[in-house]
Amino acid sequence: MLLVACAGQYQSFAASLSLGFPKNLPIQDDLADKPLPQWRDGVLVVVDRSPGSQIGISIYDRYGQRVSNLPFTVPGAKQVFVRSFTRGTDGAIALCGSVTDHDGRSDADVGWISADGTETQVIRTSPFVVWRVAFAADGTIWTQGSEIRPRAPGEAPRKTFAEAMNGSARVFRQFSRSGKMLRAVVSQSEIQNPEAVYSPSSMFEAVGDRIVWYSDLSRDYIAIAPDGSVSRVKNLALPSNEKLSGYAINRQGEIFASSVNGSTWSVSRLDLGQQTWTTVSSGSMDDRSNPNYRLTLIGAEGDSLVATGNDGRHVRLVQVNR
Image 1 (spheres, rainbow, N blue to C red):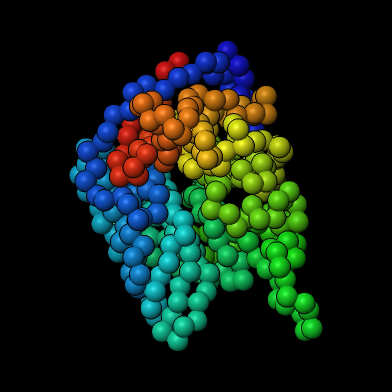
Image 2 (image 1 turned 45 degrees about the horizontal axis):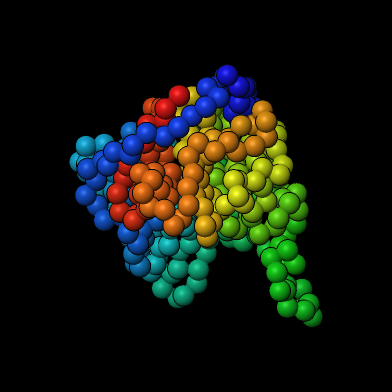
């Protein structure tokens, strides 16, 4: 056995893991050209971000039945763009992205809709651009984003985000369901690689009573406690310096990641006790014979992982063997 720290607490897990043969779930929706779906609390959440003023949110059970179809609209919007989304334990859906009005003005926004679609809330966050959103255990909403400072008169053009960023702006901000900002923590200048705060290649999720962020660019792992205190582990590189493609957190609080680069792919488990990612399954990008070839993790169901296949069109249940 080994001890793994999960969001600030150590738990015992089996030292050696492997993945079983993946089983396709009977989801009929075409997942291609849509944001990566998410599996949360036994259902699949699919968002259609086709251009327009309305976003369609479909919920499927594990038997492939569509159990809900929610339209998310923003009053006065000509186009709503969704960058990321998640689902709360009460069935509410939170989304972040941007809204463009009929005069062509665009603002960064975060919003949420109740499980039955009767309640919605949208708040403008500009100049803070939200890239990730997560529900905390207490039902509040945490966001992860980036912010640039206004260009000063006579200032030379900024060539990089590091030159343009507002170093004192907070990366993580907490909102109540009524839209009030409750807390903001960790300044942009504290992140090792500034580009990490606006990269889509990151993990942002509730793990127990913590909110956890991990970036393969900065190699930072940050956990935010309910009181806003922050703990972090630095220099956590994925196997072979691969790029994060997806993640899953099981009911025990174990964190798994799927990752790829030009030549290899991996599924790994985070071991904070040893401050490393431990490979569970891996292979060559040239060898498609492995049944778990290039899985992209989208969630967990009990002790199993849920992933999309290498074609991006199927949802698969993968048992973790211990």
